Image (cartoon, rainbow, N blue to C red; front, side, top):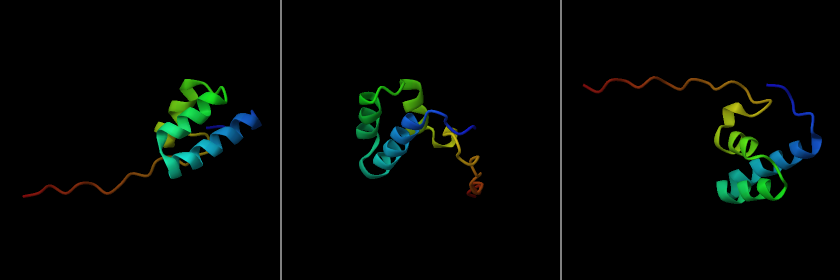
Length: 68
């Protein structure tokens, strides 16, 4: 994805991602809401890390071995 052109929103998103790592989803989502960030963007950056702008494509994990 492309890098965000709106520098202020990019700063808010970076702060929220740091908050997510330290405090969880609720405080990070509230912060973005209070800054006027759209719900669609908030959901994407907090709940779908692979969909963040500038993020690398997801790496496939190891396959599960069949128990038997």
